[in-house]
Length: 160
Image 1 (cartoon, one colour):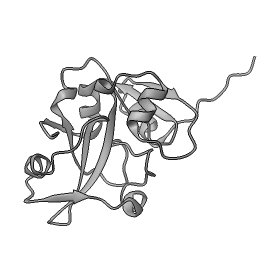
Image 2 (tube, rainbow, N blue to C red):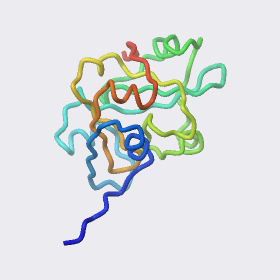
Image 3 (tube, rainbow, N blue to C red):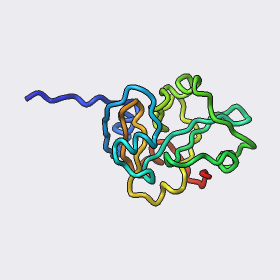
């Protein structure tokens, strides 16, 4: 019997190198689908399904926010959490250039540069959360504490 090699994303390689445990889930997807539709498609609860949002502050610095898929980022709370007066969402056309990931496959682990990352505090109480695995059709199941180890994130109340 031949062993099939599981395709690894950059995020998975980084977690492996850091010896951080995770589980990967692969599903059929060849174009951007928002997190709520993915959670619905895979029968996963919204409360543990998180999306990655890229922003840019008034200073020109980029920031990463990880929030539940069914919630909206509170721009004032988010800006305050990273010491900015204001932030705005990064334009979709700039996501790949800034992060190295495509829309729908963006994760806070293994971007081109380690940006300041904030995970919504609701994640802290969960045993495990689901995040993008760094490519369309790839999810990672990881503890919030291990996500924090991998990306240096802080936890803060950042949702509406």
